[in-house]
Image (cartoon, rainbow, N blue to C red):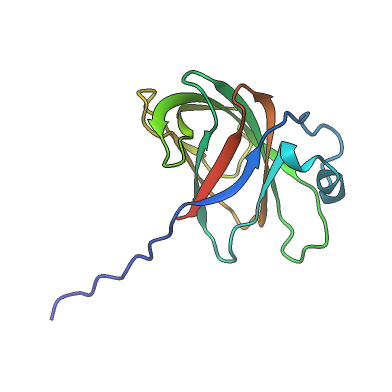
Length: 164
């Protein structure tokens, strides 16, 4: 009898939320209470399922080819939901391509990162050739992720995620 191969659970893409307005980057006060008071259309909160080790992200939206969107990404470790503080983990610049989602939204095909401040590498997968750009990161035990559009060249931006 040969060695057994463990089954790998397959997860599906889920929308974390939609951004339709620009929001100023968080500066001095990054508390959960401050974030909760922000305009809902200017932020996307992502709370991964318990036990999620890594996430893969992609961005799509009501956009035109070549639109540029800039998202600040923050993380907070708050397993009990008592309210802690977010920390900036990176700034993503995304350029829209021509790959069409089933609803007619276009995917970002290019992604770059600036101000990366994370425990581990944030992996960027980007072909700049009208494919689907993706971002992968280890959650490092953080329980909350926040996306703020500081520049919105598209009408809307949808952040999709999948548990890896």
